[in-house]
Image (cartoon, rainbow, N blue to C red; front, side, top):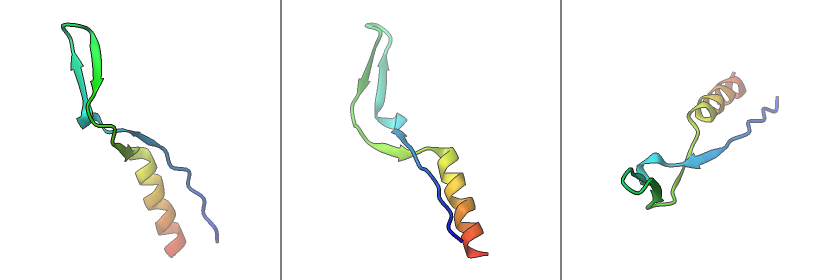
Length: 51
């Protein structure tokens, strides 16, 4: 059986700083992480594939 899972990436919130004085958002590190919902979908697909 073939299982297809589409994954997306989002910016890691640890690298984002909000400066409320000047109403600006600064991205210090442009690192990405897998979306939490996609991580659950990937885990479910791997379980289906193993069974």
